[in-house]
Image (tube, rainbow, N blue to C red):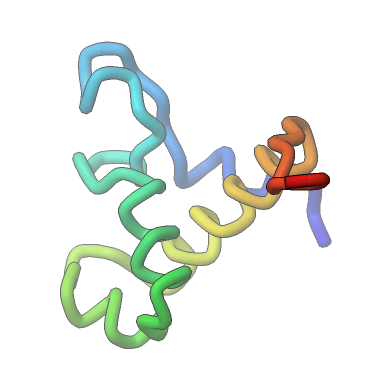
Length: 80
């Protein structure tokens, strides 16, 4: 796997969507795509809903999210 292979497809600009990570050249937030996939939608369903996206955009969103998950630990109710 190529490290940071999401960088050519994801942009973060404080003037676009409040600085949220978006697919470059769009206002489609990475978090939106990750939410769809986490809720069980397939790549095909996401691409049908957002026809301007390419399959590699969706995969870049997942790689970006995976990198964030490696960098930040949020306790998941351990000991609760």
